[in-house]
Image 1 (cartoon, one colour):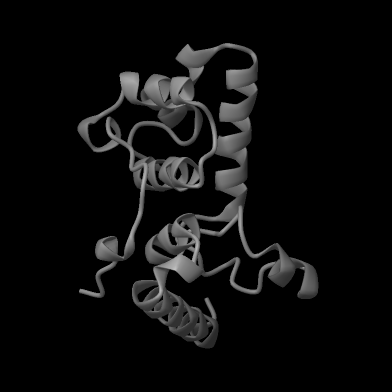
Image 2: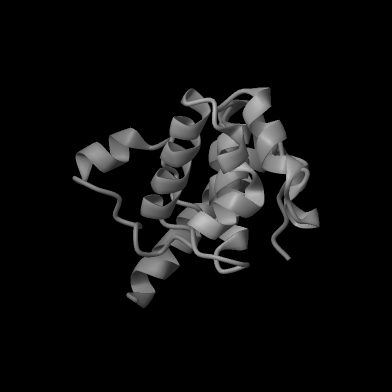
Length: 150
């Protein structure tokens, strides 16, 4: 991976998060969560993707846009079909990598969507109903006090 691209992203990430801490009213909480956890900001920064014909940092993210898109489209389709058992966490984990393969990526993807206000309470109840301890209370909010540079 390109070390300069990583360094540039980390500089952008830290600058964004410092701005978020100083003036949270000027920033979106879900986008701050994405930066904090190094997720592809799939719900945000459309103008950057349009201007550069893609996301220049796509290869740097710890959780890639393709996985996030796939997971969230699946959750949406299963919700629209009324199939909430399919979106219980362990079922999602089995579908997207198997036992513990992508657990943290899956948790962060779901939290990003929840913080952004996606999906109904019924979806979140279903996801958390059959989940390991680290996923049975997915984050609903993110704020400057959640940011740490340790």
